[in-house]
Structure formats: structure tokens, C-alpha cells
Amino acid sequence: MRRPPPLLLFPALLTVLGVGLPLLYLVLRALGAESEELREIVFRPRNLELALNTLLLTLATLLTTTLLSLPLAFLATRTDFRPRRLLLLLGVLPLALPGYVGAYALIAATGSGGTLDTLLGLRLPTPGGFWGALGVLTLFTFPYLFLNLQSALRTVDPALEEAARVLGRSRWQTFWQVTLPALRPAWLSGALLTALHVLGDFSVVSLMRYPTFSAAIYQQYTAAYDRVYSAWLALLLLVLTAAALWLEARLMRGVWLARVSPAAPRPPSRLRLGAWALAAWAFVLALGTAALVVPVGTVLYWLRLTVQESQGNPYAWASLWDAARTALSAASLAALTTTALAFPLAYIGSRYGAEGKAGRWARVTERAAYLGYATPPLAFALALVFFTLQVVPGVYQTFGLLLAAYTLHFVAEAIGPIRSGLVRATPRLEEAARVLGYSPAQTLWRVTLPLLRPGLLASGAFVFLSVLKELPLTLLLAPIGFETLARGVWTYTEEAQYAAAAPYALALVLSGALLTLLILRRER
Image (cartoon, rainbow, N blue to C red):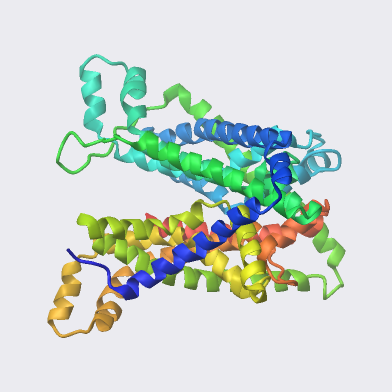
């Protein structure tokens, strides 16, 4: 029975303590009030309203993202729609737009004096409330489901569908009775990511003025200065997150989709669209217009006004360059620290998690990293604020604390690509190097790391992109004067200064799109 060496267990212990201790202190902080105050907080009617709003928005977003992503994934994998690459780009590129940029763009595009009104004379009502939040979250989170469903549709065993057709099922019956059940694991995986994103989001719901737990936490902490109530709201949000994780695990229990044939998988057959091609193009164009053309066009329109106003002023763009430099530096450093922390965790899970009691503990160690990712960013930031102010006040609002928060929250994103590389790299190569006289460090440097280079680069790129877009951790933990592109968009949009927000939004969109395309090209 092989056990991980203590040197590899240290990062895992660091991760568990880094996430667990602040959350534990958050619980103690919430329970620290007087009994009368606690009773008033727990039974406050607003809690029920926030819970219902949060649940309703989450469930509605799951429904609408499914209605968008499933037909798009089916068109991309099972039909003769051309060009197919257009569908893939449409299903992935909205991920490059942070939700708050999408909300900013749709608010600035609509209403009196908006982009659509000025350019086309089309005066649409400004989105807001539940429907506004639902629309924005749907347009910019559906790629989580699309990527999972598209991958599953490509790999579903065609023999299952062919057997159903031989038994007399029609195409629709085969789709509902065979294909859809086979997509259940992929849908659950994408739905969990979507649900966690909606539960943790506060920027979109705040801009749309729709009260949920996340929006209320930020308001209580920054405006009302009610620390105890904000701690309770964070705990209630954590309960909802835990319920989502439990439900996903429960629904996945017993799911086993083995292939019928042991041979290599065959590509699925393509359905000829025929007269349905027109409807398919209408769907694709409508989705592309709402998710990409209108947001990017709006940003460019307001950017033109900024350029006109700044002509002759050499200092007009200085704050943008400073914010871009700060954001890129922080994202680069966070990508390095997160990838460095993810490597030993992935190594433990892939090399020592095969079987037995030691293997079970190795898997638990690796999974501990997902605790930080599953915790809503605002709740995690609040826990870190309370913990550092009480235990180590010297690190409060320092870049070191912000970097630690980025690292602990995004380390789960970095584990996947590294673990995939470790699974493909046989341990026999490492054993051969040891037989030839290499030390463990030399084996790591000369054998393991070169094999993992693509996975390490992908991990760093994922984290870089996430930190570049990150907002809640930055707002609550960043040192004074730490201005990033995300903060620029958020600050100017809250003040309805759409022209001033445009350069920051465009810089984020371009950076995100470039990195997304690079990641996509590497993954293909």
C-alpha cells in the first residue's frame, strides 16, 4: 500500500487550512451575537424572500441554458449544419464576456438614448429585475452546459441508438428514450457549474437590481455595515451551495453508461436538416446577435464616444493602462501560484488514488481543493475578512491576502488539465528514470514536468482568464488603490458612466476572447 510522501501532503494540508479556517471562523462570527439578536436575524422575513429569489433564479437559469445549449450542441454534432466551427465559436466565446460586462452592455444598449435607440431608432425597455438577471445569466453561462453536452453527444455509443431504431423506435422516440438519458451525466456536470455560478454571482443581480443572497451580502457589508447579518447571509448561501453539491452527487449515484461494443467509438451519423436549415440558421443568428453582436457592438459604440472626448488629452488613458497592468500582473502571478499548488494535489490523486485505504485518503486530499471553488466567492471573501481582522489583522487588505484568495479559490480549475496529463503519462517512465540513477527531484524535472507541459500551460491559462474576470474577491480583499479592469467596469457601470466603462470592458473582452480561443485550439 503506497502512501503519498509528506512533502506532497503539505500543499494539501495548506489548502484545507486555507479554506477551512476562515469558513469555520465565519460560523463562529455568525453565532457570536446575543440570543435575542440571533433569533431576530434567523427569523427575519427577508431571508425567506432572498432564498426564494435565489432558488427561482437558479432553477430558471438551468432551464433556459438547457433550452439554448442542447439544440446548439445537437446542431454541432448530429446534423450537416455548415460551417460547424461557427457553432463551436458561438458556444464558447460568450465565456470570454464576464456577466457584469454583458449586463453593462445590455443596459447601455437599451432604453432612451441607448445604442439601439441612437443607431436604429429601436427603443427597447432597459432590462432589470428577475427577467433582466435571467436574460444576462442565460446568455453568458450557457457555454458551461454546451461544452458538456457537445462532448457527450460526440461520444454516445451509436450502437445504442441503432438498436432502438431496429426495435422500431422513430427518430424522436430514439432521441427521448435513448439519447437524452445518455446525456444525464454531462447535463448534471454542466448544470452544477451553472448553478454554482448563479448562486455565487452578485454583479449581474446587483446591476439588475434583483435581490438574492449574494447581492444582499455585498449590500449589508459595504453599505449597512451589519457584519453579523452579512455573516448569516453568507452561511445561508453556503447551505444552498452544499444542497446543490449534494443533489448533484445524489442524482449521479448509480449512473453507469457502458459502451455496447468494446471496439473504438464510431462517429455518430449526421442528420440532414433539409427544410429545417432555415430554422437552424435563425436560431444561430438570434443567439449570436444577443450574446455577441449586441454586447460587443455596444462596447464599441460607447468606446467611440470616449475616444472623441479624450482627443488632445494625453492623460485620458493613463488609468486604463494602470488598471490593465495591475490586472495582468495579478493574473499572471495567480496563475503561477495556483498551478504550483495544483501540481502536488493532482499528482497525489493520480499516482496514489488507485485503490485501498491510502488511495481513498489520496482522493479525499485532492478533492479538498474543490472546497474553495465550491464556496461562493463573496462568502469566501467575507470569511477571509472576518478571519484576518481577528487573527492576523496585519494582512488585511494586502496583495498577499488577495493572491492567497485567488489561489485557494481557483486551484480546482488548475487540477483538471494537470491530472489529465498525469493519467496519460505512464508511471513506468518515472520508474525507469529512478532505475537509471536519477533522484526524485531529477526525475520530476527531466521526465515528469516535460510530459506535463501542455497540461500546466492549460491550467495557467484557465486561472489567468478567471482571475482577469474575477470581481467579488477583488472588491472585498484588494488593497486600497488596487484598480483592475473588472473594477473599472463595475465602478463606472454602477454610476451609469457607460462611455467611461467601455475601454475597460473592451480590454476584458479582447483578453478573454484571445485566451479562450488559445485554450480551445489547444484542447482540440
